[in-house]
Structures are given as C-alpha cells and as structure tokens.
Image: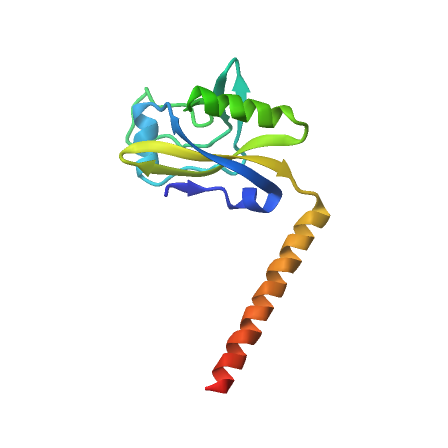
Length: 150
C-alpha cells in the first residue's frame, strides 16, 4: 500500500469499487516505490471514453534529473471498456463522482482502487460517527460483561 484516501470514506457513500492500472513515467514509479504519494484532493473523470486521474500528488523523484515528472499531472487509468461504460452510466446520475481510495502495487504494477461515490451532507457524517460510537460502546459493554462473568 502506497497511499490511502481515508477522508473519502468519511465524505462519500461509496458504491461500486474498481481496480485500475495507471500510465506512469519511470520517475513516478520510483517515487511511488519510495512510498510517497497523496490522494487527498484527487478525483477521476471520464473524457472521450478514457478515465483520467486528476490532482493526485506524486512528488518528484529526489534522485531524478531534469526529466522529472510534474507532480500533479493528469494520469490515464486503464480499465476495460465495459467498466468504463458502467462508470459513465453511474456518474451520469447527478451528484455522483469517481473517488480514488487507495494506491498500491500488485504484481509489480501500480494500481489505484476507485469507487463511485455520492457526497455526504454534514448530518450524514454526524449520523455515521454516532453509529460508530454506539457500536463501539456496545462492544465495550459486552466485552466488560464477558470479563466479569469468568
């Protein structure tokens, strides 16, 4: 795992997940192998039947030369045509976007996990936090009850 977008799970209701390959330059791969990347502001768009990852930050390779890559350039994502068509149908609905969740290596290839997300309102976020706290309290109470019964 190179990078995760933890904020995405907090800010969006996530639907279908996809694994996509990435078109990268050599210095980008080396920088990723050093474990340096950020998906905090990243999103994906579909332009002319191609999926593009935008605003993902892969810092310059520290041992690179003048041929280093641009840190926030648009990167093409590699998906099957039917997956792109499914994404296009999903995003065509209002209020949905393609959110990158994780950046990692699989069998030597850089992959990005993307999902179709619907933005949460503030009250949705509060409900999610309240439900998580309630579950945590219930599991603590159950654990303490089990410890006392021994």
